[in-house]
Image 1 (cartoon, rainbow, N blue to C red):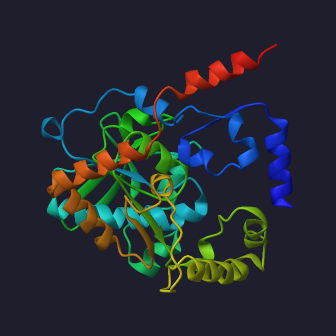
Image 2 (cartoon, helix red, strand yellow):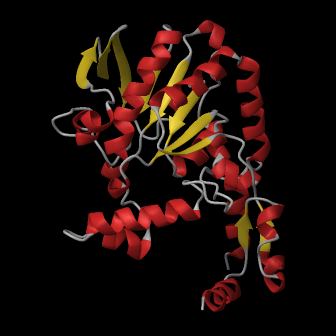
Length: 310
């Protein structure tokens, strides 16, 4: 059925743009002549922002992208708060920024940082935080043994100017991995699975059932354990699926994808190692640039449309 609809789609369109030659190779042979390689639309993002200042001229900056849905934020916010406390112990001059997704507010982010609202904080011993103001900037503030840490919140969308200043980011899966790849910002992709029943963000029918009252949590737990086995999360022999877009494009893991019962200190150590070995960080940047498509995709797509106009 899928192949039939795919063939119909290719038959309906006169021409279409694709990212690279690898994409053309996936198109059924009778329709490859309709494909034009235009490059990567996401690279237009990089052209929209100024070049970042050298790290030597500013504080090292780590971006935090915990997600845009409640089920991701419930784990992601306290996990990342605990992670930054470990980083600050080793690198006291690191700056932390958090671009707020357009589907949530700063107040909602702060709610997931409170133990009275988020049971995961006490359950896993992760960190709390509160909404505060540092001069004219709204921040998510967490208190640690080594002092107070302010994570700067940015509500501008898209926040490319903020992400471009980051030396590295910690992110969940999603379109943001494509944006970071286009900006050549090294990233660690984290999918903590400590509480399987809160992961209800699957697409299609599984996602609908997982969010039903009464039966939803039980179904989500079972389905996530099943998917975890299929994806290699629990040590199965199957090759694990790649999640981050740059890794999907490359066909291999060029930025680390950490899936399972993750500990904040382990992710923190990855970032500390990167920031203390700038040559390794540069290698990741170069690799990200090598897998993203060519620039100029937008103008090439416009040219195709103009040619097709009567």
